[in-house]
Length: 73
Image (cartoon, rainbow, N blue to C red):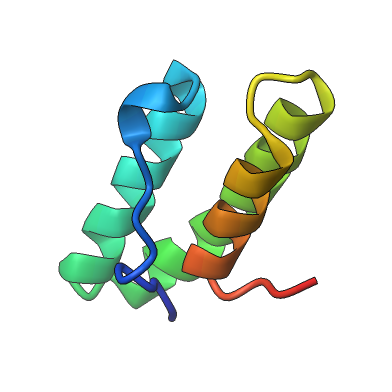
């Protein structure tokens, strides 16, 4: 379980679906709900990719969001 809060994400600039996913994943992390976090992180990754592909977020936002959840490409 990994969530790097040192990377600042302006959630107001994210599409609502991604903002909700980000906040839910963050809450799982803070509440130490490891099972829920692990099950949900793949869904969040897919949402990040989809939002980048459709132009809802920039490449830098995609990279930053991936880094928050421990994905380094």
